[in-house]
Image (cartoon, rainbow, N blue to C red; front, side, top):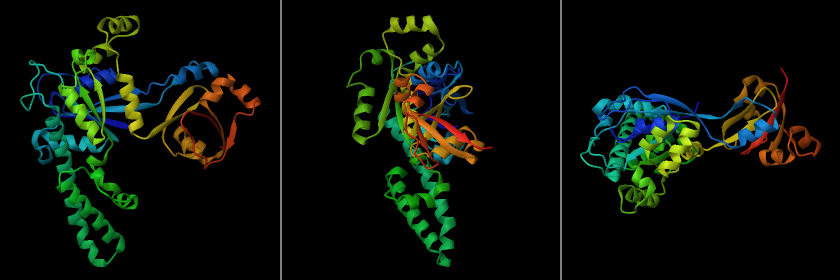
Length: 364
């Protein structure tokens, strides 16, 4: 399952954001390292097309694509050298596919700030520097182990060392690994390196309820937004405490609360942003026992998509019957779409596109 790690300094609201996104009820306290072992929450990716497909296929069972959010303990200065159980927490970050970096932008005297005061740019830099330093130590160790192998004259090893030295220079200068000018084959040779600062990142400004109602360019959030826009980074905003409270409500009670507070919830949009950050698209299946959405990387072939459902389907793949969701919705049913000639017959190497509805034929 695809994993998004929620990171940041202690007491910035990571567990609150986690609860808002997953409704998992993780413990939230006003002291550092309340979270030690990661909290895990599996979250459905919202998609309005699923209910429509349920009606088209007359299916009551609807299964959405999912993402697992991982609430990781706060990082502090010196985490890369083991401060505040930093090595353990950094290891948890290496196990995720993408990062949701929570930055505190709300004032609250009753919630201690580990750096003394709210300053989102400083807080963000503290965490990012620890990630860079951790990656730097990892590259240095890899270089130390690889350099002796170069004596053999192996060209692949020589190229690997060249790539590592370029990476080292970038990290040593205080920049993230993703800014290194390395070709894809160079990155492929370093596949096991698993650098933290190469993972895709979304920054989340954890704002107050007042800020959600009346955004200000001069606020902590406004300054963070201006900086990240300049850097070309993605920023989303959430009144974490408010949305965590909302996550505990359902149905009419939830709608009444939303109307009363006058703030639009953004949890669903953030889940969808994380989904897109991972470079994922959605395809659907509906011929069978359930309507199901599936998450796959863009560029996935029909046979590979079939394997997402079951390895036996990929192994015995014959062909795929494919139609874009919009065309199926217009036709009204699978049979009507077939009679209209709107369903394509595709081979194993055909690329599946966003919103395709598929039926895979295979032999056992």
